[in-house]
Image (cartoon, rainbow, N blue to C red; front, side, top):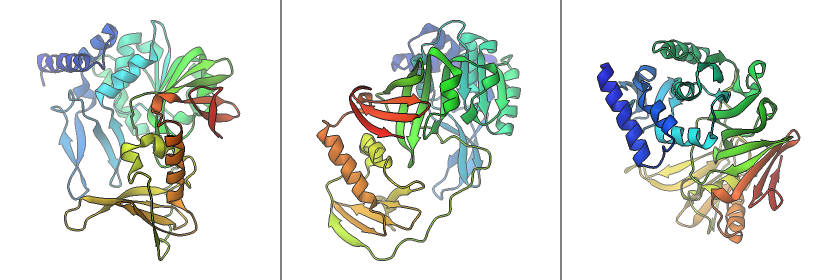
Length: 363
């Protein structure tokens, strides 16, 4: 790809994002138009019908609005380059100002760090990732076009304390709760933007502001999802054998809340057992979804299809979904913007409508 070709494609991407309403700030428009994303994402992986992953050239995809899987280990994706439309919405939501110092959790390909460095300068951008190879590759590719933000291979849960405090912290990975280190490392008046996904991967982006001893803010109206933050020594949990039998009963709760009722799924996930799996029941011939299923580590499970739930085991999984759905309906079916989060050294508290209104969880 020649210099003229990528510049044309990058400018077209910036224009596409602007027309869609995702990009408004001229400084971020310039960052997108002047950053050679194809140098940071030269290859990607696509999943075939058999579930396997194959490497593909990403140059044609680099200036699209697609999420690109960039690293696969043991048959599962572990790193990706976020959809550019989501990326720029997050950057604009941070409302950075000249001179701000930003910590990014999750370096990935380095593209987000490159956009930040274009806007704020290399010296004000700090980015960490737990994977040393990912950081090494990103550093080399960024330097290839003269971009040199501060990068380190460390576990993002601890932030990067020696260079703090920061005016902004942005995470391009999902966490089940806000690490205390991030509370400590952001300045008063500063902001933290992160995807909070509890237990089953249920949740959304939340934009928090540092107010003296706490972080506080609301979830974003538009839903988004990131891969879970990885840590040194992560171990795949052992799965229990499914409980035998199964009893049927009717249910009024939505069959696949993680698709069409994500707020309900979030509320249910707060009470569901850790390590639970969820997914679809597929027709053996057409491979199309005919229902949904949940399974807990203790072997408890349920299947739901056409208003009927079949369940077995010691833990009543679907009852948590039903309770969450009933509560959500009783509150007037609130969207994400009515939910918020307060984070202190003692824990984090989920609330509805305002910090002094309805508290939903204390942890």
